Every structure is written in structure tokens, then in C-alpha cells.
Image 1: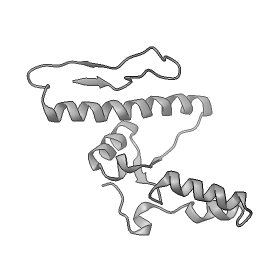
Image 2: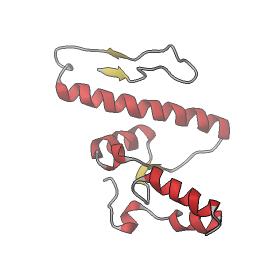
Image 3: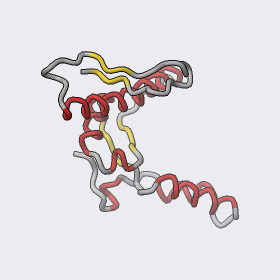
Length: 135
């Protein structure tokens, strides 16, 4: 079963709608539907990655995932690692949006420079700060 999760279209194709194909008595199960939705979500990210990769002309060896969708759902992380064919790491900090807002605020009021703030997170893996990576 293949689930296209673009239920509200895309930036390039706002009229596009999602779909579910390949349904059979063997594939239409709660687990099959959940796996299909997770694969569909990751496929959207992967297609965006392919677009960026072709524009930049670079290949990456790892991806860094952020958000509780990946942090709290190991199967989603495994699907992403498999589809991207890369090592998947969790971001070094939790609550990434709130952390980013704090970082922007610290820079805006002149407490730290961009270089100082970025140095705080650069190069830290989730496993390095005791959160454990996706296996």
C-alpha cells in the first residue's frame, strides 16, 4: 500500500491531493496504514531533499531530524534512514523551535554573537548529550 500524504497539496502544486493506492485484503490493516502514512511523510521530505540536492550539487552522508515526530517515533526514524540511505541523527536539543527562538533573542539583544550561539549546538549529536540516537 502506498499513501500519498499531500492532503493539502504542495507549494508547487497546491491543488494536488493525497491518495491511498495498492490496497488489498493483505495490505489494508491498521499497521499497514500507519506504515504507509509514515512512509508518505518521509517520502515528501525525501523529494524535497532530492530537489535541494540537484540544485546544490552536493551529497550528504547524514541527516539530522528535529521534532517529536522523530524523537518519539523510532520506526519513523528507521524509515527515514532507509529512504535517505543515510545515518539519521536527532538534533542536539529538544524543543527545537523554542530553542531557536531563544537563540534569536539572545543574538537580537546582543548577549551573544551568532558564532557563539551556533558553536553551542554545532557538532553535538543527540547521543553525545545523553539522549541516545536512533538505532
